[in-house]
Length: 250
Image 1 (tube, rainbow, N blue to C red):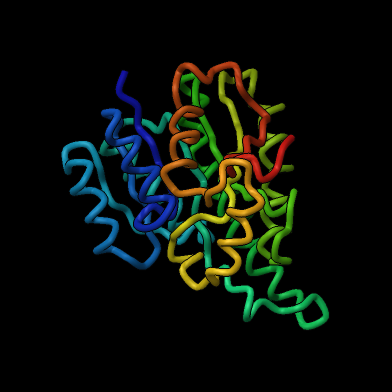
Image 2 (tube, rainbow, N blue to C red):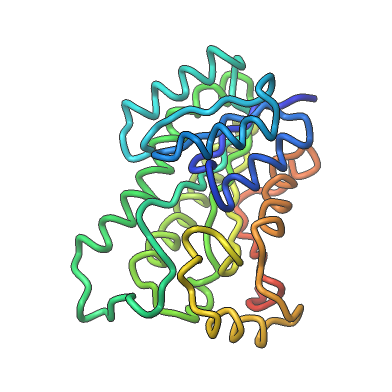
């Protein structure tokens, strides 16, 4: 069965890999982007223009989100799978990360708005489509850093921890509608735009302390996301599944 999948922030990095993997399965994919239209259209071309569509929207802006969802509906009829992946304005650079005493609430608010409000806006906008068909998958992208803060990325990690609470509350409420809600938490990914400035020493430290002896890749995480979007994962909801080679164990 062909499904329609919306992946936020999917012009590059992990989001692009998730979009490509869904597309390789024959799904119809909406490649959402904020600024990088050329990169988004490149992902669409990889999937195939008959089965993919690039749409610009800042997930922090509800009007833009609603317009994107309306365009999705017009093109593909519905949305079966939503992946909240967008990451707004953060780089994993331990050399410039502020210590807690140097942080302001605006630093926290920026990540809470991008991560939590972004997921809130898109999920709430998509929800009527899923409820109308009594089926859907919502998959939120988390991090293993709130289990094992190798580097204290305070504001980023706190926002992702809040996203887990958001996910589990939705899972409780939406189960009766046939909608599952889960989180997939990767380790630090080698390499995306956000982790491009991460020092080799940090990557080496993570690999040395990971049972599988390697750093997690976007392909690793995307594989779990596509599984949770599948029919085989219909009995899984409210879970945070960590994909990090065993660095953290639940």
